[in-house]
Structures are given as C-alpha cells and as structure tokens.
Image (cartoon, rainbow, N blue to C red; front, top):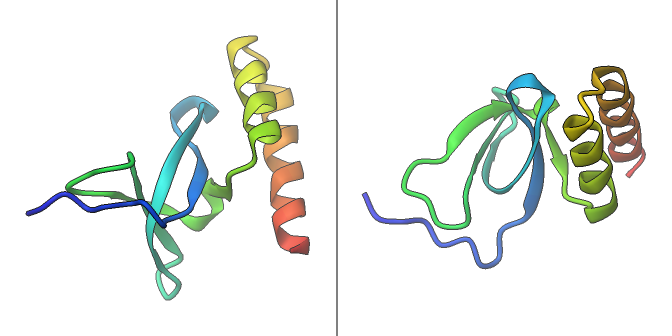
Length: 91
C-alpha cells in the first residue's frame, strides 16, 4: 500500500485516549457510519474514529486543550471540547 499524500487535506483536532488533543490530517469521511479516517501528514493506513471525537483544527482551541491536558484538568478539557462542538455545530 502506498503512502497517502495530504497536501490539500484538512487538519483536525482528535480527542484521543485520556482526552489528549492530537493534531492530525483527515483523509476521508464516512457519513453513513459517522466515522473520520485520520492520520499523520503522510500515512499508509489512517485510523477510523467517530465523528464526535474529531474537530476542525483551530490553533487557539488546540492550545487551550493542550494546556488543560498538561495541567491534568479533566473538567476543563470536557468544557473546551463541549465549546468546540457547539462552535462547529453553528458553522
């Protein structure tokens, strides 16, 4: 299998294990299954995640999430993820 090129694909924030934010690339959306295939900029096999755990990339939101995660503040992380979900729903 060849490496997938991601030059024109969108960056996303992924809510990973332990609510840790990770910036990745979205390769494909399966709307029927409500899954997004994400991975690093060049990957052979993107992973599939629920759409509820993938958000449009925004540097400010990503920074807030990183800070809350590094501080070990799970309540703040949940608040920020909820704010991002509301923001994305309004777009």
